[in-house]
Length: 337
Image 1 (cartoon, one colour):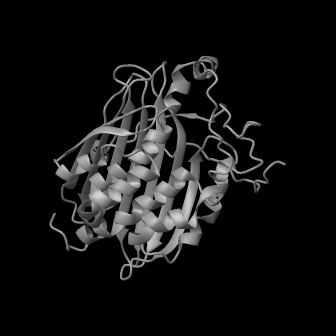
Image 2 (cartoon, one colour):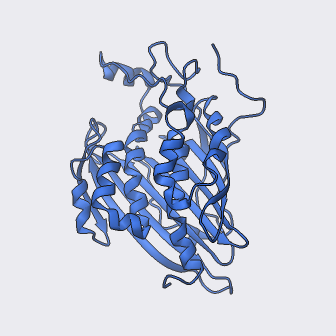
């Protein structure tokens, strides 16, 4: 039975470059580039960068508040972390070696990097995103290798049963094959650069990549008035042989929170690009998280939107707001700039 999709609910296309930075705001940006330096099927390399940028309210020059990077080697078959470094160095990060991307890596992350979590650092956002990056990295192959060749290369290996893992793959979804595996007919769209032409500093440094690669990008803008205002986006894109990039996942998420308690007052998700027509259904239920303290989002989102109640990638977009209180402290002068 086909899934009923409300009239007008559909992905609306890429949102374009970042909006103008507002006076007296903090912008957190992050990217993880996924590549296979020794060729397809070899070790997956994740190069992550993240930065917090303050835009003063007096018209002064923007100030870099924090900047972190990581380099991670991952087994392409098991998604197991084989090596990892951070810059500036964090000795504890080697404790993640041996963790498998997904729930395992996040469990280990919470144990070995608890101080980073408490400090709400850009590095912690990157480390938490290892789970999602290792999950979606292989999509890039479908842009560079004919689907028939990918299927043949898989041989007799059973494809993963995706039914029930998220809203887009709920029972009856047109995204599913009869055996429960996902269809190869992803909806993608060409996408332009992340920074604005008139504001190159609005994003941290980005590599120009032409070989097979995926990129997960995040932007979180925070301002304070009567309420805390949050405007964020995330995007998963792949390079393509003819040049440029195509996007397969993109959401813009906005929220407000109480400046005294940090509790979420409103939450809204705007689906921009998604791989299947059922995927935007996940955007209809995000207001269920209203009333949750921002700091609790990393755990609360997973509890509130399990399985078909949510979207893996939209869930992570909401979870990434857990460190907003740290950015608010900069704006309130409670952290040195």
